[in-house]
Amino acid sequence: MSDPRSDKPAVLAVMKLPPFYVERLQRDFELLDRLHVTDPAAFSKAAPRIRAVTGGGESLVDRELMARLPALEMVSIMGVGYDKVDVAAAKERRIPVTHTPDVLNDEVADLAIGLMLSVARRLPQADRFVREGQWEQGAMPLARKMSGARLGIVGLGRIGQAIAKRAQAFGMSIAYTSRSRKDVPHDFHADVVSLASNVDFLVVITPGGAGTRHLIDAKVLKALGPQGYLVNVSRGTVVDEAALIRALQDGTVAGAALDVFEDEPRVPPALRALDNVVLTPHIGSGTVQTRHAMAQLAFDNLAAHFAGRALPTPVPECR
Ligand code: NAP
Image (tube, rainbow, N blue to C red; front, side, top):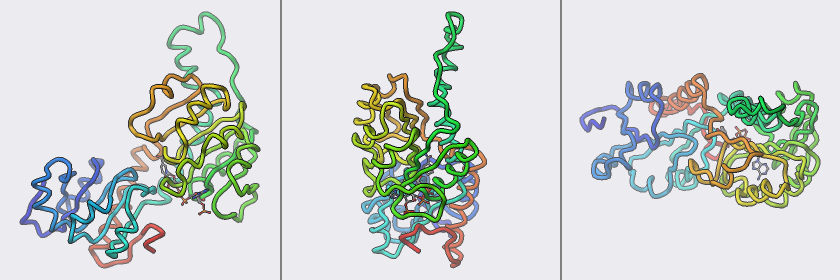
C-alpha cells in the first residue's frame, strides 16, 4: 500500500474505489487507500508527500483535510457532484478540483425514467404482490399512467436535458426550472412552486450544496398536490425529507421515488414504512459501464495534471 521509497506521486483515496480504478491508479501512482481514516499515525507520516486526493461524488474533502496536506496539488472527483469538496479552500491554494461530467448523463437519466415508471406503475409493489401470493386473492389495484403526463424538471442541466429527451419518447409534456432560461422548446418556470403546481411528475436533478438546500420544501410539495409524484435523483439535501415524509403520510402528494437521502446510507424508518414510495440506494451512475467511464475520466484528470497538460474536466469554479 504505502511505499515511501516510491518515486510515483502519492495519491490519497478518500473513499473505497472500484477495483478497476485502483488498478489503473496503482500503475502510475502510490495509492494510499483511506489512510486518514484507517491508520492516522501512518497518515501523519505520509501526509507531507501526498500530492493528490481522489474520491467520489459523496466524498468529504474539507478545509481541515486539505490543511493536513501541504504538498496537495489537485483533487480529482469520480462523479459529477462535488458538493462535499470545499472548492473555495482549494482555490485559495490554487489547487484545481476536477469531476466527471457527461459520461454519466445517460445512466442517471435512465434511472430517473425508471423511478418515474416504478412509482407510477407501482413496480416494486407489483413484484411483492406476486411473490407474496396476493394475486391469488384478486387483481392488483390500478396504477397511474405515465405516458402523456406532465413532467417538471428541476435543473435542466446535462442530466436534466437527457431526462427531457427520454420523456419526449413517452409523449410527456415538459416544463422546467433552473437558474437561467435555456434555449429549448420547453416551458420555463422562474420558481419551483409554479413548476410543481403545473405538473404530474416533478423530477429533481440540481446539484446539492448550500444553494439548493431544501429547495423542495412543504410549499413545493403542497403545490405538487395529491395527484403528484416527486422523483429525486440529485442529492438528499435538496429535499426537506421530514416535510416529504409528512406529505407522503397525509396524502399531500401521491408518491415519491428517491435515489438519494439526507443522511445516507441511513433512511428514516418512517420513509421505509410507507407504501407509496420507491427507494433505491444512490445508484444513479451505478453500472459497470458508466463507473468504468467515470474512473477513466477521473484518472485522465490526474494523469493530465502530473504530465503538465490541461485538465480535461475541471469543475466550473476552477476553469
Ligand atoms: P449541471 O449540468 O450543472 O446541471 C445542474 C442544473 O441545476 C442546471 O440547470 C442549473 O441551472 C440547475 N440549478 C442549480 N442550482 C439551482 C437552483 N438553486 N434552482 C434551480 N435550478 C438550479 O449538472 P448535471 O451534470 O446535470 O448533474 C446534476 C446533479 O445530479 C449533480 O450535481 C449531482 O448532485 C446529481 N447526480 C446524482 C447522481 C445519482 O447517483 N443519483 C448521479 C450523478 C449526478 P443553470 O443551468 O441555470 O445554472
